[in-house]
Every structure is written in structure tokens, then in C-alpha cells.
Amino acid sequence: MTEYTDPPGMPEDERMTAAEFKVVREFLGLTGDWLAGHLGVSSRTVRHWEQGKFAIPDGVRLAVEDLEQRTAGFVSGIVAKLMDVPDPALITYRDDEEYRAAHPDMEFPASWHRAVIARVAQEVPAVSIVFADEVPA
Image (cartoon, rainbow, N blue to C red; front, side):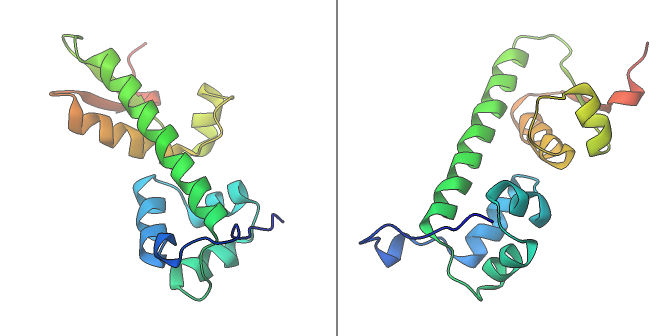
């Protein structure tokens, strides 16, 4: 397991709250189990952070902010590619197995991809969304 500690002199007012942590995790479409694995901590630790039982270390806040930035960049890239497409369409995946089969190099789960697609759909007018197994041959 990874040990997260605060750097010396970290101001308390910059600490991520339990509510922030949970809201961001859910906004990113990530399960507590996935995030725990990504951070190298137990699922129980993630639950405790979300319940406010343990303070969220600054290293965790920074790791979560990194996930937010990477996700935002991914969303922006897709939006930019679709803005001039006449009939934009997006494919997403029902589960991790299907997502991994299509994108073996992606570290994120299918739930993250669906959250990304939802954010893209807010930015791209009239985009259609289908599951991969619904794409006509």
C-alpha cells in the first residue's frame, strides 16, 4: 500500500474535504474500489476519507487533481474533434471487459469513459451516443 503524507507546512485550508473527495470521484465516474487501487490504498481507506473519518492527505488531493486535469484534457480533445462533424456520434461501453477489449492501453474503467461521454454530450450539440455493440456493421 502507498503511504501518503502531507508535506511540511501544508496549510489546513487547502485540505480536500470529504465531500469534495466524494463529489470529484463520482463526477469522474470512478468507483471507490477503482480509486483505491489507483492510489494504492485499501477500499476501506477511501470509504473513511469519504466519511470524514480520516483527513485526506495532500498527496491524495494532488493525485485526484491530476485525474481531474487528465480527464478534462480528454474531454476537451474529443469535443474539439467533434465540433465540425455534421452528425457527431460517440461510442461508449457497458462494462470494463468491453472497454478493455476496445482500449487495452487505457487505465480507466468503463464508468469513467461513460462520465467523459456525458461531459462531451453537454458540449457538442446533437451528438448521438451508442454502446459499442449497437454500432451497425
